[in-house]
Length: 411
Ligand code: URA
Image (tube, rainbow, N blue to C red; front, side, top):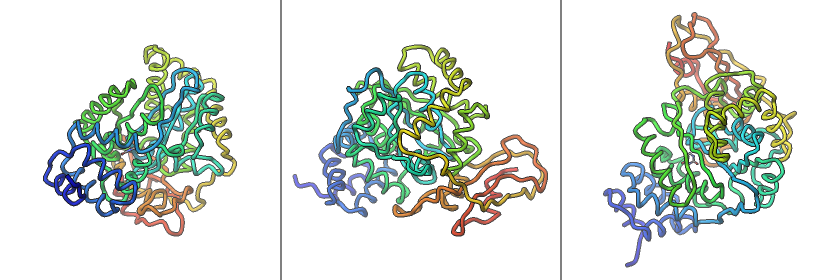
């Protein structure tokens, strides 16, 4: 039977299950440029609205994995681990977790992504460091892992090219928040990246792509099942993303905050989440309990080994931290109310940060690494009228109103 994209879109619109052939025809066709952006957008939206069966998810994951190369890490000795976050606001955990794990002697082969929707991405954060090479070749990636236990790259060469193309389209078509599409996107990348053990940090809350614990549990189950199919031990952790993670949102600001955490200056929720993630990776790699691994984590933070590992990583990938720059144009935002701070809406902060210039609205948008938000008050704080709630780091094109910023804070 001759396949055609209009029938396939229509089938999904009617909530029917697509066959592997239909998925291949649509997605591989899109990669080849035979299926257009507008047709794929319609199909993605139908998937978003009408969901996918487990079988469709397995098939689509397979199509994504086989759309490009599969990284062979057999030349890297020992167990290789990888972690991924489903995305949130202020989530700079990779910048903290990767050096911790590496300084505990575990190899972390990290493939990272760019910002998606209102969430930030590790690659964008790292590119705020001048010279930092986020597109390592296969050889560079493997050599660096053997030399310093850690490498962070956006997709090396031809790895899951289909995910790259679909990810960019989802970002600008309001099709990011779909459990099947998230599962396929993340697990295909992780499996093609060649690590032996995979840890997924599922973020839940207003500032996450996943809004409910029910969805997080479903995502967790399906990801573990996908991992099993490919013989990769997969663990998931569900963490809160109702408030931004940490105090800074925006690319350079978040890199600076990661430095502070690794220097042991801040023992906040961000510290807690980062150390739990690191401990789980070490536990999987070394076959020890998470509690035992946590002790190792605390040692390398206290003795600064993890901090110096981050510096080593940045240097190894060509970055120069002396050039890190934040905007000089800093605007304090003061409360117009007195009361207790009940909520800092991560979603609104994410949108605000994007509008200041820290994220993209169209695929072509250039990020301003110097802009963002630094929170000055946290949940439960007693606020007096006139207190500074946060600082905005802005440029001339930053779009915001004071009211929009105040609306991020529920007092
Ligand atoms: N991170 C990814 O890599 N893909 C998604 O779809 C969401 C978060």
